[in-house]
Length: 197
Image (cartoon, rainbow, N blue to C red):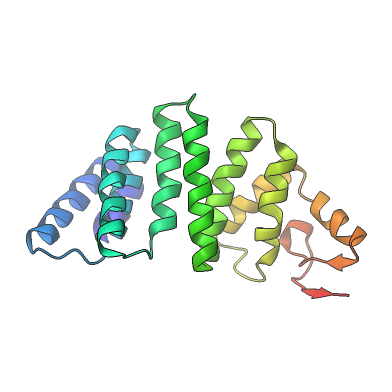
């Protein structure tokens, strides 16, 4: 954990600490939680613009997921894979998009809302760059709208900003036409409410 914290501010030192800790852990023969720790390392590599090394680490993590069936962090691994692919091959949006779709599918199957939100944000940003703003908004707005608390967290603040950039109030208007009220949230400066009429 120390390496992960360091990687956020002192990237190189964080990568070193994460790598050393992981090597010690692997030397014990243990494999439990390795996908999680490898994801932290891959994210640190991505932050340091070393996406190729990040992809190598993610490949190792996904192999362990398949080998051991430890799927707790699988959605994040696919999302990070999409991030690294985009960082390494800017024009390879198809592979990055496929990784994001895989991350969404896994998160939805696991009913894991935070990984689903992060995968949806990555895919929405990609679609925004491709001028698919409506599709991006339609993907992200219902996931953001599902949330009723935690609006001060980094993920929800990022989702709010992204929706605002995409013209986020369109989903509420569509819901009203369907005679459904979706949760209102800080994006609209009102309390969170959820009900269907």
